[in-house]
Image (cartoon, rainbow, N blue to C red; front, side, top):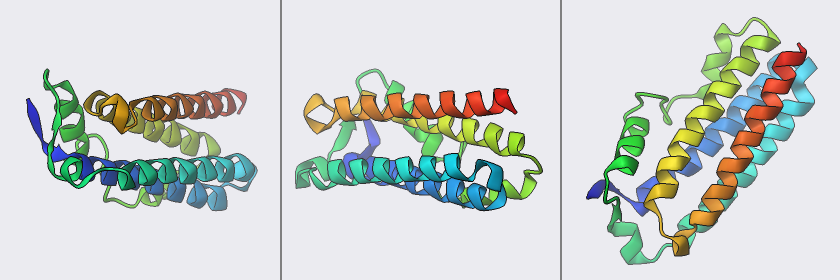
Length: 160
């Protein structure tokens, strides 16, 4: 089944997720000085992820930018549609707004873990929808890094 996204749109969404993640971590670092160093490091990692997606995006041929994404079982389509519709998280929303409800460092860590989980769900769908030549292995690496972010945040949460 061909999904109603093209690769160009999918990579734009992936880039925006990373921009939003970096913005969230920087805003959280300002609000929670005790976590500032770790949160700024996570923001820098998200900046690097955005650059990876931007490079992958730039390498798409004109045909790849326009053609639908191959998804024979419809699973990637479901993941990506849920994400794009804002049912799990809204990539157009300002993630720093979530900090308004954070009173403690534990609150921000829990929100950050949730955002990382959401991005992993999106990237799993993205990985399932791109070919090896289009960067499937790089997406797999980014998923591993996002899992590492969850581990780091969880350790910090457990220690607090």
